[in-house]
Every structure is written in structure tokens, then in C-alpha cells.
Length: 48
Image 1 (cartoon, one colour):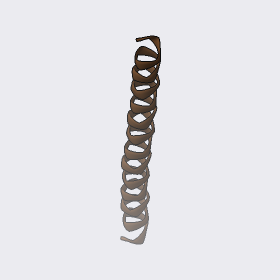
Image 2 (cartoon, helix red, strand yellow):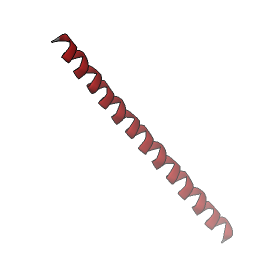
Image 3 (tube, rainbow, N blue to C red):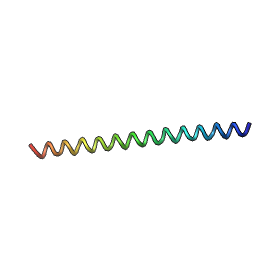
Image 4 (cartoon, rainbow, N blue to C red):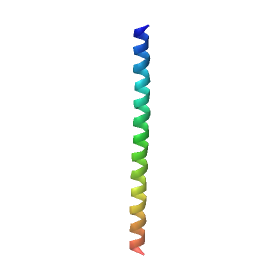
């Protein structure tokens, strides 16, 4: 009983960590793409 409970808990924690990393990773990628977009827009505005 206890062993299966521990196994269940560790799988649950693993899933939580995975979701956390995916969320952080996607938000970092999102921020990077916004920064790139703004720097390209700035270059366009400067070249006008």
C-alpha cells in the first residue's frame, strides 16, 4: 500500500514539474520572440 502510494506521489510530482518547466519554457520563448519583434520594428522605424 505504502509503496504504491510513494510511486503515485513521485509520478504526480514529476508531472507537476514537467508542466512547470513547459510553462516557463514557453513563456521564455514568448518573451524572446516579442523582444525580437520589437527590435526589428525599431530597426524599421530607424531606417525610415
